[in-house]
Each structure stands twice: as C-alpha cells, then as structure tokens.
Length: 149
Image (cartoon, rainbow, N blue to C red; front, side, top):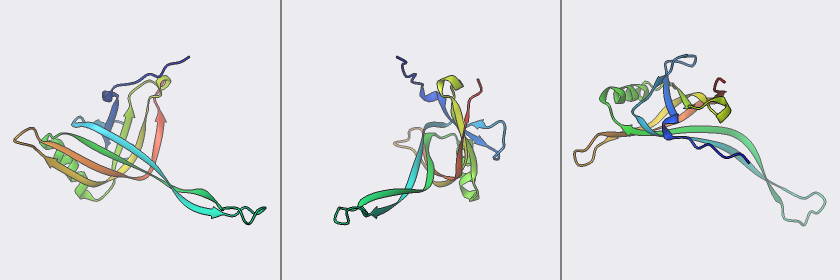
C-alpha cells in the first residue's frame, strides 16, 4: 500500500511574475503564510419526477462558474511591502505562480494566474516586528502545469 508524502510549508511558494509569460518569476520571500482557495458556483433547480407527479421534487445543481483566491501574510520588508502596495494601487492584474516545489512524480508543479488585490493590511503589536496580510481574487483562469520530470 502506498503512503502519502507530506511536504513542508517551504515547498508551497508564491512567485510574482512580470507578465503572463514571464519565464523567471521571483520568489516572494516575505510571504510566509499562504493559502489558495478554489470554489465552484452552481445554479440550483428543483425538478419533478415525471413518472410520479406527487413525489417531492429533487434538487439539481448545475455548475455555472469557478473562482479562486489567495490569502497571504508574513513579516513586512519595507521594499517588498511597497511592491505589494504598488500592485494593489495599479488596479490591473498582477501575475502570480503558486508552486508545489516537488518533482512531477510526487505531484509537483505550479499554477499560473492573474490576481487583483482585495485588501492589504500592515500592522505591528506593542512595538514588535511589522507584519502584513493580504487577500487577492483570481482574475480569469488558474492554469496548472506539472513539474518537469
């Protein structure tokens, strides 16, 4: 029986791209906590049983769309944080790559897509280190590419 191969958080990486075809995305090293959420949207309909009109109607769910979003947080570096703000203030999509940094045989690869920032927060508590959080919504398709062998 095969066993799952858990992998560490350092192997889930958020990379910033200069455009959709950038071959060398840059590691966003200040992003220490990250999460990718994918969702499906459905229209619901109830349909009758044509053979038994007195039966309770059954619900049918029809897929109508998909969406994705990313939540990030980390320790703020002033220069890196300013890049996040610049991306947010631009109002145009920022291109990202989310990597599962493992060989293809272990399920590795990456997603590529564009995001629009929904929120960005910077804060510190009791004079401690400055941290940030941000939420981005996917803009368009999120494409998967398997890692090279």
